[in-house]
Image (cartoon, rainbow, N blue to C red):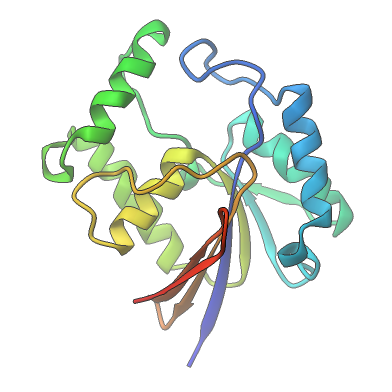
Length: 187
């Protein structure tokens, strides 16, 4: 039985809000959060992991300290990019997102459904252990699929929080959400 472990990490605090800048890097606080990942108990043995990041700058900058520690190249993968807000003006993105997270999945725009499926497919088809630096809604979309949630929003992952997923034979077996306490959910 083939087992793959995926570690998803939400990017650190961005220098600008999602609705104010198309691709912000990390704030000073976000840079510190990314550096602190080096001390995280669950991230001490990543030598056999692939390092994958959303192509967004805040995710890449979050990945760099750990990638440097393990002398790893960061592979950019659009499968894990933030939720697409097609043709939504920057100043309208926050309102649009609030509407999207309350929308039942079967009523979502087709392009959001396609984005959601890409995340799930890329995850279950992973070929090796990977650490993936990504976004709030990507993590929510994946976990909401695993739990058969009616909407994309499942929880509120903090900056640089760690979510671990175990896949056996292309089926997600369990996941661990880091928060105030760690909770394993077996599927």
